Image 1 (cartoon, rainbow, N blue to C red):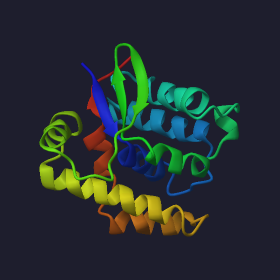
Image 2: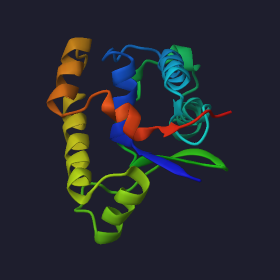
Image 3: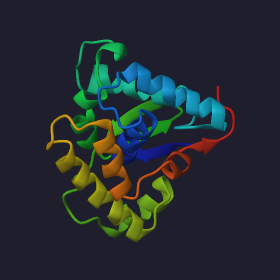
Length: 173
C-alpha cells in the first residue's frame, strides 16, 4: 500500500531528529531516521529504505545536485523540499510531487489529505499555514541556530508526536 508525507512534515521529521541543526549532513539525517525506525519499530514510507531512497532521488534527480549525501547540509535543500507538495512512496519507488499550495484547497484535495496524510480539513489547513511559516522562517534568518529552530517548531505545535503520525508500524525490509 502506498504512503505519503507532506513536504513540511518531511522537513519537520528531519529537524526533530537532527535536534534543529540545519547544518546536519543529509547522510547523518538519514542515519538518525533509520535509528528512530529501528528503535520504534516504525518506518517512514512503506519500507525502512524509503527515506534514504527519497533523499537520494531528490538530490540527484529532482535537484540535480551532483554531491554525495554526506556532502550536503539539510539547510541547502529545505526550501527546495518545501517547493514540493509531498513525498510519495509506493512499490514502484519514492518521489517528491508538487501541487500549487498557494491556492485554497478544493474539496478533493481536502479529502486526499484525510486519506493520504491522516489530517482533518482543519488540521490540513493548519499544515498549509505551517508550510508558509516554514518558508518564511528559513529565509530569515538564513542560518538559525538549533535552539531557534526547535523553538520555531514548538510554536508551530510540531513535536515528536509527528514522528509517530507520519510513520507506519512494523518491521520493514
